[in-house]
View (cartoon, rainbow, N blue to C red):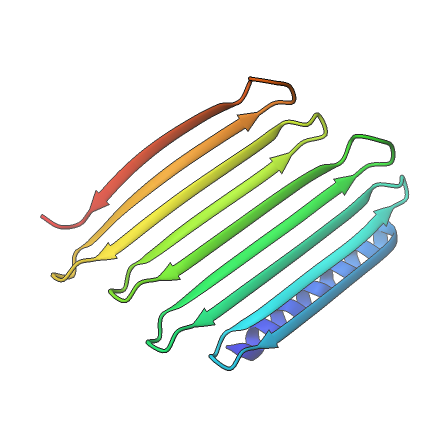
Length: 171
């Protein structure tokens, strides 16, 4: 498992660099992986390139996996991408983060958050929280909360919508 991820990360880094280099003026990529004593790891993959019209693109993916003594674990993955066309005040940034924490009963808690800022300054944040429990009788129940916030540039114009759903396979 450890080597599979390292091979995939290296392949992705080489693929990004090769494709970026073919179409762009400059391209750089880097992949690092550090294994932890508990069986987890920390991995980072980053790339930068600038194309002929001067647009700069960056991407960075980090993943942190921890394994607890009881065999449960947690994983946090974050991806940040930016696009900066030549000129002023037109940079856009996107962030995606997923956090998963395993529970002793076989369930898990997962939070997935995306944040995007467009070149006009509008911020959009989506957050999805999922809580899954495995009950003593083996039935599974889950609750998902979805929240979306849109904040256009300016004052007092932010909107937030939220929804919840519950599911269970028990009778």
